Amino acid sequence: MLNGGAGRRFPKRRPASPPPGDPPGGGEALRVVDVTKWYGGVQALDRVSMSVDAGEVVALVGDNGAGKSTLVDIIAGVVAPDEGEFYVRGERVAIRSTNDAALFGIRTVHQEHTLADNLSVVENLFLGRELSHGVGPLLRLDFASMQQRTSAAMSDLGITTIADIRAPVEKMSGGQRQSVSVARATLEKYPIVVLDEPTAGLGVAQVHRVMQLVLRLRAQGTAIVIVSQNIEEIFEVADRIVVLHLGKVGAILRRADTTPEAVVSAVMGVA
Image (cartoon, helix red, strand yellow):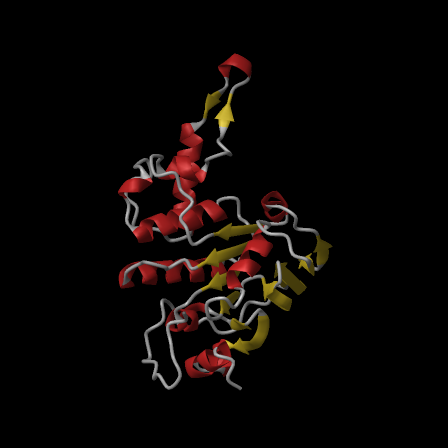
């Protein structure tokens, strides 16, 4: 359930960085049009349309069962829609698998941390795409290059809480692990990143670091879709807010022109 409620007064909080303001206008990165999904006799999504521009953060909110996870899985290529169209940078594409999504520049960080606990930060970032040098029987993993690129990625994203990138991630906090997950998604400079509940289960300080990370990605021109149940977090980073209600788009709101109370009302289906 969304962390809010009708009649609740939301305290003003100091944002993770200066307020987002208007996105830099990098052009439309991703658009989904009339996406529909049925599970047996249950319609999870009913002609859902939304878009996100380069350098923009779009928050996807809704109560439990609103269709958020289904939409994220469809964008990620995990689930196939029954109907709908996808456009990446204005070109119609077909997303039938996670490989398709990656090919079109879409990377999704799911709520469950998909990291290998026994591997280091470096090994997790390059898992399945390891760098090597030499040929034939002389082929060797290029650990030096992987460490260098990992350090550069951490620096680019402003991640300063991980002292040793060679340490196994199982010894790290939730916030550090989430930072590794985001860094892994952005290592190859994916222009579109979907973050599914990136702060779930984190403490206040860790949440603040993740929000800073989101804004850093935004400043780099990344198009970001973030799913969150926390209304206050949404107002720290979002440029626009897409509200799903019972599988339909209930509202699309500009953060600068709305209030937390109005968003909660839209989530509840209250006009």
